[in-house]
Length: 219
Image (cartoon, rainbow, N blue to C red; front, side, top):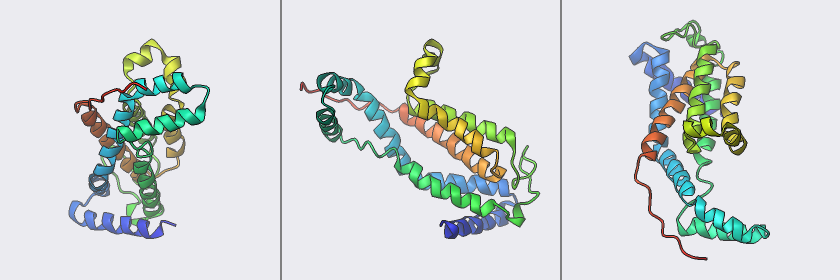
């Protein structure tokens, strides 16, 4: 399905290798280029999620007011999103865009003869699995999930059960990555690790931006 994209990735990596003489460095450069292209989407996603966190008190008021009428609650919630120009689905778009890239990169690196035996830093072979990188990728993804959900380490220390209960999906992703990462070539994991590390930095910087001031209106 993404064969053409896999061929494109392979050609780009080959072109970068002609300059860097390192497939590991070529993967990192390609990752940086992809993240730069996707940055507008990423910024929009993170900003939208930040706005959604800001209006949570208003959503809770609507929940209390229309708790027994789910249809009315959803209608009023959508009005609230429209009022503050928030798209609740914007958070899905970067993930939908990244998944084909990840699949294409896996197709490009899987069984690629040029990659066999190519080492990078502490990674002995980019064409084979490498468990330390699997774990590192899972850890970085966990940090990204915490930043995305605006969960602080103080929250985890004070009430870990509530954090787990309220954010099962966010905390499940690192475990999912560790599970499937064991079967991925280290080259794919390197892309995933660098990509998520950049995402953590981006989310941190965006979270430091001043909050948008919303004026609450009485319902």
